[in-house]
Length: 388
Image 1: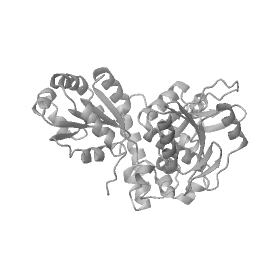
Image 2: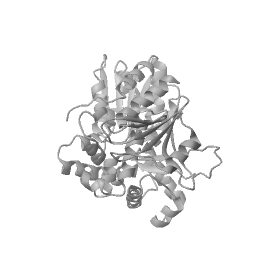
Image 3: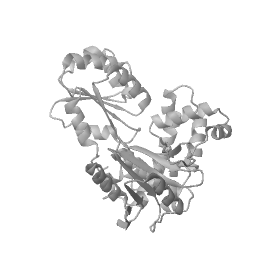
């Protein structure tokens, strides 16, 4: 497959220059290993270890001696969460060695990685999150329709045979449920599959933990644990409500989005764009796409949604560097705002409101409002951030 440059490449390179340890985290199969192998033309020798390979694990039977013997190299450790006892040793090594750029660690499960490293490597590690392909990385190569249907995972997006792409996503789901899930205790693959399917059918909806728990035969606390695991393995976005003092009765239950649209289409058995476009979930898939890309491009931004009890709402509120922007997602070639959208905008008074749609050209709607392509949305947001 052709290699497409990732947007976080420069950030990872800067991390290697400015921090003893750089961590690249993100979902399994999103391209962390491929990105790393292209980065390792670094101007110094490197060592690459994949902890899913028994031969590489054996090299770490005496890890202190092994690391000392490789001191002059950049040591890259893939799937590092499988050996969390390495983190205290890495801390000791980098403290003894001084300088930066000693370790590059990759992880596909943030729960163990973040907990262990935050305890052992505070002040010594910088985190970079890699997502499946963002639209800016592939918009010269694929259409909106293809991107929405197959999602952003490289082996799904870059596969030219639709049946093979679909099969890869089915296999990915099975692997997550039947193998990756076994890393954590207290989770059932059967229950997780049913929950994932329920979330796919209700993508982008507010979640009632008790209702979901009743449908699955588990407690609301267990539902919360399952959702937390899905979030910490980068499988869902949990979008919180925007809290304001407008005096309106606000919906305070979070919304849940499955992060990758290709996974949603596979869960729902939707093979192509025509099936997807005719499905009730189609509008929420566009919202998932926008949210996933915003989080990937602006990882420090705060995202939320605004909804009152009488239906006044805005899909996404974007806050960063003092800027508050409203973003309404419309999966239409001729997008329009509803009365409820305009009421929400009056309540919130954002700097600007963007209506983002799968269109070919952006255009101004009126003062303070623009209809934009996904690409232009990011450009416009960058301009607002620069100006504040």
